[in-house]
Image (cartoon, rainbow, N blue to C red; front, side):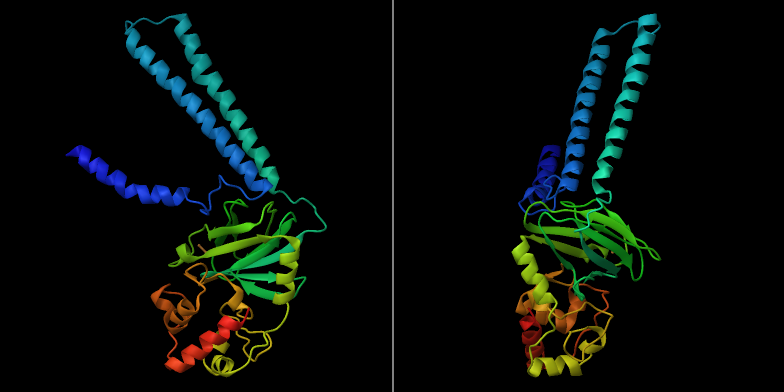
Length: 323
Ligand code: CUA
């Protein structure tokens, strides 16, 4: 009976285990940059020390049980054993791991790189505003960076505290009300790296994801040039967007839509996800999100849009075309 119960629990845990090990999972143990590689090295070092300590202690406990000496026998060699193995050895191990951990933190210090790319990230309940100050444009939830170049992230919040964490690239850095926190990282291989808000910030804290797209220089520069341009698409969808309540909360550069409450949508069609990682950015999901975002991310600031079917189709096609 107990065995079948354990079997059932194990079977229920298997998908979780498989998901956590599958390719593309944002594991801190598959680093995408030198800073995260230091963290992964530290993790393996601590894991190795923990395994050795666990094995040694287990062997000693078994040995002590097997010897069954008289409980009242106190010897000077016994006292020495306690002082050496119970105090001195743990003190050496803990001092070593503490200093090694402090040293690993230096991997995230300001590298004073004059060629660093600066990105300003502002946390909102529950999405990320992303600004490239040198190129004068704003985007959301997806941060493109060139491989091999230092990225300087300036973190602030528009409301409550959040925390910026991309396990394969960075350590956690908080976005604290009333101040700007700086952090630096470098991606040393191309890839899509998932990040997550790591400080509880309200109902949809769990659906406050972001993505770092690390790409070679040429692809990054092409993306940067495209993002710097205003939107040029026209047609019925644009008219619906500007006339409906969309424009009072969202900006589309090059149109009359200049709202600042929600994400900038100037090039939303080129993004991979919607709602800070909630849905994939496909036309069907985009239409569903516009019609009733509350069904997918309850409590977020976007109210359901009472649009006629043809209006919804037109505005979806318009946003999808903004690449
Ligand atoms: Cu933002 Cu949790």
